[in-house]
Image (cartoon, rainbow, N blue to C red; front, side, top):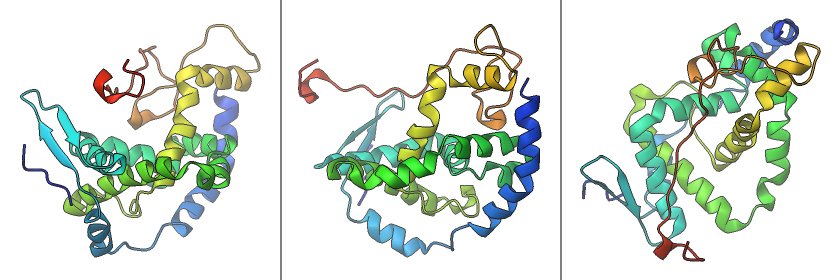
Length: 231
C-alpha cells in the first residue's frame, strides 16, 4: 500500500461532421460499467511505494520493485495534474467528443485514422512482462488517486489501465515529430510548406492554433547511480 505521508482542416472537419453522431453514440454504448472502489483499493494494497516531496514539491519515489515505483509515480502525477491525465486518456480512447462536444470530434477521428487501439490490442501482450507491470503499476496509482477523489472523476473514466498508458504513447508521440503539420498539409491538398500547427493545449486538442508554441512535456531524470550504464 502507498506509504505517502512520510513526506485547410475544412476537409477533415467535414468528414468528422459526418461521423460525429456515430462517435457520440458509440462512446455512450462503449461506456464501461461502474467500477467497485473496493477492487481498486485491493489492487493498490499489492504495491509498496514511498513518496517524499522536497521543499520544491518535487516527488521522490522509491519502492522495492519497478512496478511499485510506477504506482507511486502514477499517484504523485495524479496529485499534480489528474485533470490532464484523465483528459488525455479519454482523448486517446477516441471518446473526447462524448465529453466535450463536436469540436473534439477531430481528435476522435485521428485516433481511429491512426489505428491506435488496433496497434495496442495486437501488441500489448507481446511487451515484456516487466514492462507491462510498470505500465499497469502506473495505471493503478492513477486509479488509487481517483477513488480517493471521486469528485474529480468523469463518468466512465475508470478503470484506467496499462493499455491506456501504452495507447497514450502510441497516439501522442508522432505529434512531437510534426505529424500535425503533415496532416494539415494532406487535408489542404499539399505536403510541405508553412502551415499553422495543431494546438497542443488539451482544451482545444488538435484544433488549428493561431500561435505556434514550443512543444514540451514531462521530464523524468534518472541518477547515474541508478542507471545500468552509469550515465
